Length: 238
Image (cartoon, rainbow, N blue to C red; front, top):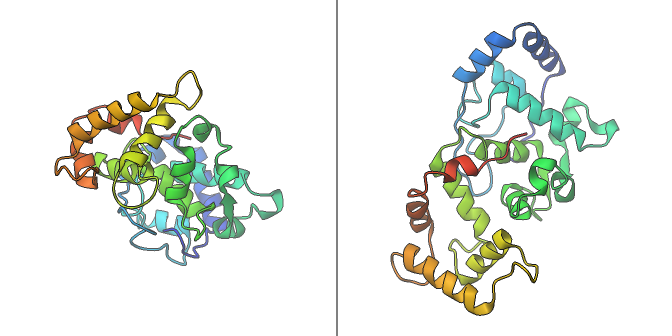
């Protein structure tokens, strides 16, 4: 997804919303059958949206390899994204071409309290300056943080989020920033230099299998695989 110029049909949106109102039971059953699988990507989805539009793809089940979200969840995401746009730019066509600033995305209640909110937005942004999200970036984010995303997908993106300098490894500075995000950086919660060093030494002792002083993706995923609660805690629900 990411940088495509897809358009969402107003008629299809209206038709779908009528179907949703009239037959919620059957819609939920259909959505359960239409779970979708994303592919981790360094800069965009493996396949862009077709010109026919978002709901055209949904109606033909062509979204199955793009996202873990159901039709209902995608429509909800679109409504929430539109709420961040100026009133005059909330048409279907304009909303799918628009980008929302990180400041606006970070104002969402679901992200406000997340200690990694800024990193999350930057990782999922396809803007060259990584300072805004398109609707497809927004879907990308919500898909990875959904309940049905796989542990491998979640750990892949968790690693990217924790890799603050984007060099492909978690070094001591990355780990220090990670700890500060979790503990807070106030005087009452911030670790002392000696406490931080000891904690990072312990993390590397447990996780750095090849003993090169950093944690790579496979080492990170090996550690995460031993944490049964990781996948369920790594989520954002609108």
